[in-house]
Length: 568
Image (tube, rainbow, N blue to C red; front, side):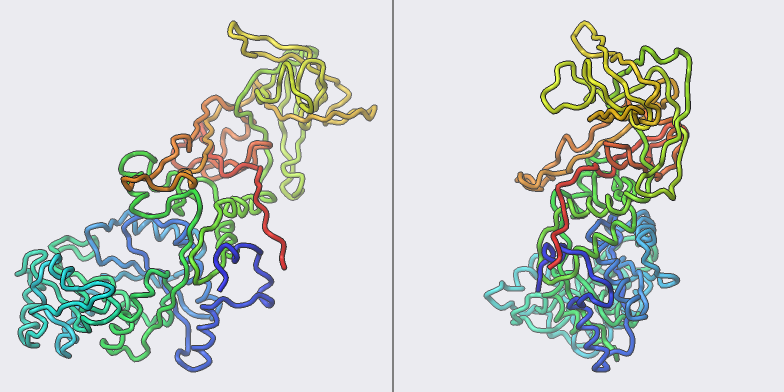
């Protein structure tokens, strides 16, 4: 089976021509053999944090399979651990799934909806002699479990009678047992080569208030017991999950079989999405959030879905990325540059190309009439005429990028220097005549003269210039804040330090407070994005922008060394 890196090598072919992935092949087989007469999938997040790019792959895979086979897709929260769960996380997950375009309609469920049924299934297992109440401590259970090479040892409480187990389990439910004093365990096989089958805990005592059920319950099911029951109750046919659950599959099958589901769901595992130079683990993201290293779960340096949305990524770009990554059974890492490639490709024909100066220096055109302002008609996107044109003011004093002027330039420097003529984008040819400096030798003002006959950026006499630079008119420009981003971590040095903390890149964020943009951008709406010519794609921050005071996040730079390999 090809790995994810290979799967990301080429775009998918047309639907009719593309080969099916291994999950689709298994579903086809199940349908052909009559194992199932429909397809139903689910995305089952635990509401203990915000979703990240890896979850986007799972969401789109499960939703895509349901859509492909004319089936149903459920969004179901596995809210069985009230110690870590919050309604904030529930709300963010719902928003993320909707934003990605995965339509769950009225099919929103919670594991807590089934607590009574789970309890009844636990009672059923006790009556069948398949579960028992155990008084061993957590450390003792761990010691009794054995190792990968040695079998476990049976609990001294394993052979309690059905009647005693029912009584003790009821006492657990009624709140008569302290936390950690007792658990309910499945009775399977302490000699199993799969440690997950060595009488696993399926219920624990926890006197905790649940975000949805309040104080109704003081016993809570374990994930490995709850999850297959949830799937069975909802008539899920294919439980698509990541590879770390492969060793749990025998337990999943045991639960649905012993609980008597007539058409038990089938678990199929696929490889997780690992991305270079980013942090995806919830506990590590939580660490960054709680220490204030980032400004929340939606900090644009993160790859939570909320952070990607805030930074300016589009649902279409995420869907394209997941499509290119593909589905496989082999773990591998995907280059972050592929995600950047996808957003560039998505935005390049959709967004207007505007002028913004991030590191400004003033340019004075000495022979341009003082006090005069003219308006130039500028095409919004030369590659997409449908986006139309806009009016851009031009005047005697402009701002240009500081890097577009050098007093003593090296060879092959085609921008502005004394004596050189360049094109001001969409405007005029100008020839640099000199500059002013402060006491420290820093350039403060550049001087030039323009050729009025070159309006629009072309000379009637046919002369050419090699350099074109962008600008904004100083009188009408609007000052804004711009944020530039680098990788959150340096993959070459390792994502984590020796103490388990994140190897955070202190240069991951640069804030520029003295940037100037075209006047129309002052009222850009939250989430609106543009291409700043020569600087990249930028999006109006949804959190820190204020009316008339936009903050722009750089989504991605224009330059990329990444190219999709040619198709075979």
